Image (cartoon, rainbow, N blue to C red; front, side, top):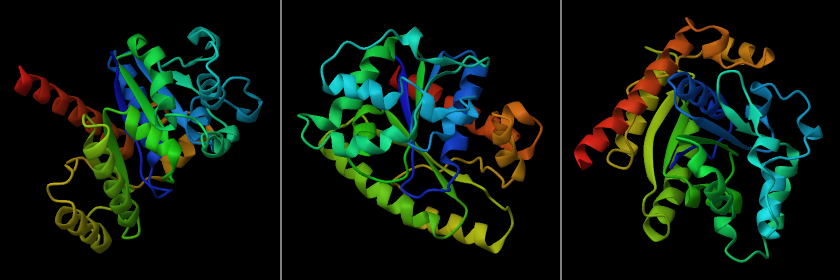
Length: 269
């Protein structure tokens, strides 16, 4: 059964899609059977993985969820998943996903529609990474009800902490009352400019404000224009320029994530 990891923050521009797509790429590179669900109507993850006309897609995560809502038979996975040469299998998205909030209004058990879909593919993978939209609502509650853990990319700027604080409030409510297995995998500092006053202040605020509530990854992702440039070539930074400092940092972050899982398994054993 796959582990479901949601990459989320309630503020945009925190490196969420870059983190989700790169994590999926690196897990696949390490031999893990990995799916990536693009759960943002902007479709950034789909674009990075080579979809050039996202609004021409016939089957997206939105159309799949509409079939779940209507209790219709889902198409075969092979008919819609986008298989990338890296090994990552992408369930794409486009602007139709912005209608999901409205379409869920009168649906029974609407917070579990995504879980119902993911349950149909979960046995096919070791990891399912979800790249989330940046605003809270019923779709994001669906993600929290479905996920096993959350990675929170947080830009190394003061305003980014506000989105982190709001997310943690919602996480605590859902973890306490509904999805008891849900945990925060860690807070990931992105777009960092090491040794600057701002970076130091952000770290101090996070360490004091969220101490005990969520772990903080030791690895920070440095700011690099090459991360945005890689998107122009439909690649993650690790595929586009593997020796770039941001790419090296994402490799270390993935190792840190997997090492943490191994420690958990040993502790349980």
